[in-house]
Length: 304
Image (tube, rainbow, N blue to C red; front, side):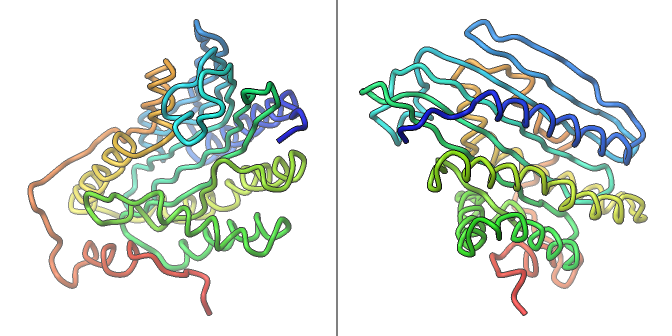
């Protein structure tokens, strides 16, 4: 990419996006999010917004970060040797919401921007992001709504983008050691600069701005569903898959830790209560088994 990106505009939008999402989630939960503004010694800083033991959200956070460095960490430079060792900056909003009610799915959303230069001193930049849904007790109506909202957000920027980014999401949020999807997917993209800065930025904005429309109706409709200890136990077990993915495979987590990021903010995505069991399997025909048979296998949720 030869043209210089407008990093100030991206930063202003990201800060506004964080504010709007926190306001909407506070309205649903009834508890205010903690605000923690921090600085990074190597350059940059961020704002962490976190709620724990909320009325609806057991643990959730919406982070903004803008960090700078003199040399790219290995996780960012491995696929682009021409930019290794050059100064860089990265900014983004990343969120994970873990509701208390097992019938309300966990959700993740991230939009980010990365900028550096190549060996010739020319600007190199890209956008990344997406959102994905991780239910414990699946609901087809919810999953279809989530995927339809993702498709609608991408439609103005190319008819092929949704299929492309959905497949990318399915492949990315996959636990290879389990041969199992983390959830029901959504969309995911990275290293995106295909359409020039203005269009790439507009597409990323559309994805970020679609999050509340994608998730809030699901959260509000499921947050008061009756549940018992059985459902909470299964929720804790399945949350273990979330931890495994984030610590082993997640590119953002690895980048944050390797670049000297703020550990508390990076690990904010971890669920509050988690269980692991040795060789546990759900009973055939049970609601828990339905997650594995009816929701985790990759499929086209919007097919007629």
